[in-house]
Image (cartoon, rainbow, N blue to C red; front, side, top):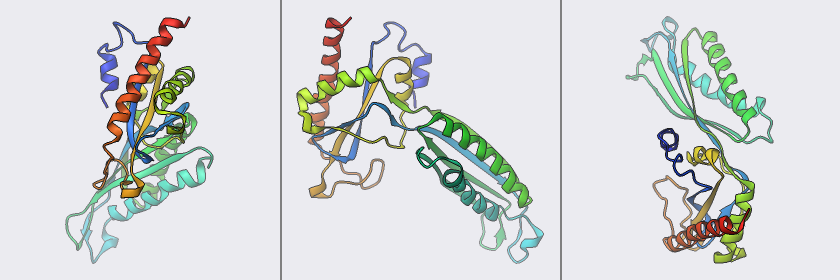
Length: 256
């Protein structure tokens, strides 16, 4: 995301905005509707890379080496235990391994493996716990299997937190132009957005623009190969964005 760099380069310095707005298309909501939530609406996102170094050998003699694929597979399972056994079930937390690369031939024990993945959290305490648990677990699992491991862990985006007062005004503006039935309070999602950085600098409001069409089967999630937005939502998004900006300008003229 570029928000952190934009802020560092002074995008909010002169003039500093009173508020910032953002939206993201969402196929789980029908076209014609929008979704909002006060407080956390999207999760914090972290990125990790684990490098496993074993010792290569022939596949017929695994005892002569240290199998990096075996160790990596143990790590994949162990990492899931952080969420299921160390984090309060009432605190949404996700640890996902997205890639695992190792080896170059069917009959050779791989001497190195690399795993990459992401951690998503809403609660700051859970975020701290997961990183600390990963560091402990990587060391322990690799030592148990005679491998050497390195963990690179990057704090990427904080959670997207909507300002309470701004959200209250925004919902009024959205309901005015779209109608109350089209403006729906929604649950937070574990995706992330660098809009979070902007909303930490000034009051922010982020919402979801419905682009789904159940009748036509256009419900595939965003960033998938089968994602198909209902383009009728474009006009809805323009109206919603304009209403939010005009509503906040009016609030600035009449407010304290």
